[in-house]
Length: 253
Image (cartoon, rainbow, N blue to C red; front, top):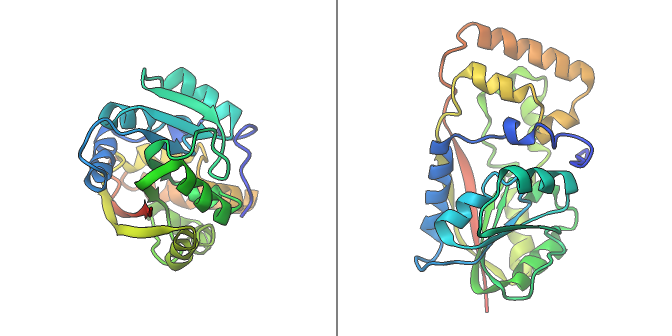
């Protein structure tokens, strides 16, 4: 996997390229609520918070949140466009978080696990910052549970290249159980449509997915040509829903 340096690329367009509809955000918040304690407030960590796609919504629903991200540029965007009175954004990473031990009730990692370089260290660090019984909401793709989005088929070796970015589920579980976690639940969340196919294409053109960083210029050009031809046949058709995986882990005492 070619690493993406978010301080040099993508940060300008990330929020637009990875935007969620309000309905999509509500569905995800509901899925998180279903696996978290009912009491409020809960203290949360948004690990790999990026431009703050979820951070204010987490604060609104559950209580105070610290967004942790290593990218200066991404945090700057979040601080300008994703402010909330119960949100702070701090420099850090999954391997090294600037918060006291046992200070949070839950942590969310939404499509950021595949960027973590030292996964064993991250699993231990996440256990450190959560209270006993605290939960980690790991919204990640897994190579053996791949969502296969509709547009990916138009890129040569698209499914193969995208799946290679992610670990199989059993490897992720093994890493966490070795660090004192247990699996609380694993399931899928049906994400509503992102809009029309033309609207999705416009966001994809911003190339804010890790997948695009793995392709050569020639592969990108040819893939987008194919995708544009397919979308032009029915641009107003709604993009299909698809099921995303959510792994919930619990920190053991």
